[in-house]
Image (cartoon, rainbow, N blue to C red; front, side, top):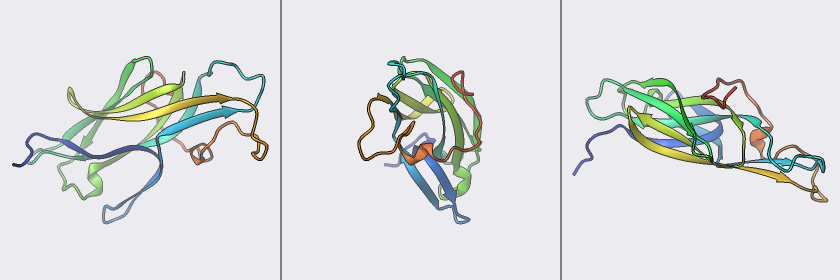
Length: 170
């Protein structure tokens, strides 16, 4: 029996970069599920200060059969349960293997506490999916063989221009 309704999310994740070929093939680089903000400074505050980070969110949406378009709204939820939503992104009624169904949204977010954040993908008042992002704050002495750094992971080495979203974005 075929599924009715729609739209459906084919893929959603945080990542560092995305390439979409002319044929519509996606190459997603460095899928991000955890951001670790690390400091080796013994004077660092015990509580995580607000930290800004730029990353990309990718979502591929498959519209329902016969739909003229799909209006997608992206939202965020912080570890305290506070939610906010961004603007409407329109997805045309293209076949699911075309680049038109893939939204690549640059996020510049300020994380005000460690914990589990969620990106949310909405179609109208229907929540289609949630994507977790774990934010970790580490203080401590550096490992003997590691150079001093403010953060770990290649996602921090390549900041990019981006637009903001919600009250915690800048």
